Image (cartoon, rainbow, N blue to C red):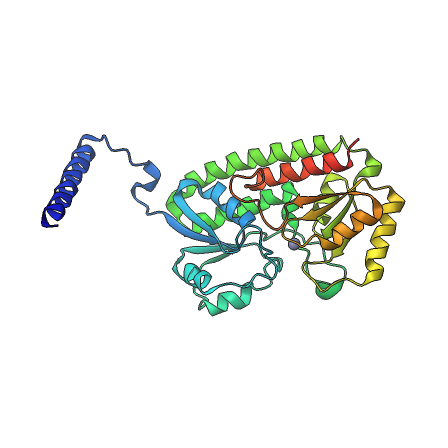
Length: 311
Ligand SMILES: [Zn+2]
C-alpha cells in the first residue's frame, strides 16, 4: 500500500514538473480567453435560453438549465438542487413575460441576491386571450427568429455586465450568432412558400404560435390550451376544433413534446388529419437529437410543417 502511495506521489510530482516546464517553454496551450478570468457559472431557466446564452458566452461560461429538456417550463417546480445552483452561480438568465410562472417566488426563496437578466426585455408582447391566464403576456416570442435577435443583444449586455473583460469575445460570438439567425429567418421564409397559402393553418396543443404565425404568414386555426397545461378543456371546445379542421380540410395537426398528446390524438382520429407530435416550443430536444439547439429546433419544426401541410 505504502509503495502504491509513493508511486502515486512520484507520478504527481512528475506531472507538476512536466507542466511547469511546458509552461516555461510555452508548450502548454491555455486559451487566451481563460488566462485571466475563471470561467463564469451561469444559470438559465430552461433549455432554449440555455442554448442562446451558450452561443454568446462561448467558452467563457458554463451554462446550466434549471428546467430539464422535455419538461414544461411554465409550471415547473424548482428543486432544492436548483436553489443551491442559483445561489452558487455568477448570474441568472430568465425569459420573462411570465413564461416562468414560478420564477419570482423561487428567486425570493434563494435570498434574492443573484444578478438576474430578463432575456426578452424590450419585446412588445401579444396577449393571452382566454383561460386561466387571460390578459397575461403571451411569452412564446422566441418562435419568431427576428425577436430572438433582441434576446441575443440582451444576453450580450448581461454577460458584459458580469464579465466586462470578455466584451470583445461576447461581441464576436453575438455577431456570428446573429448572422446565423438571419440565415435561419430567410430559410424559414423560403420553406414556408412551399406550403400553399390556404394550407398555412396551425392547429396545435398550446397557443404558442402567435408570434411565429404573424411573422411567417400562417393563421392559427385553433388550440387546446391557452397557456399549457391548463385544466381539461370543455368537450364543446374539442368539438369546435374538430369542426374547424374538417371544414378547412386540414391535412395535419401538431402537438408539442412537452404536452400530453391524448386530446390531439382524439382530434386526429375524428378528422383524419395526420398528427405530427414532435414539435418543439417550450423545450429543445434531447442532446444529440435534430432539435438540440434553438436553430436546429426551428428547422425541425418548419420541416414538419412543410411535411404535414405542403403538397
Ligand atoms: Zn408554452
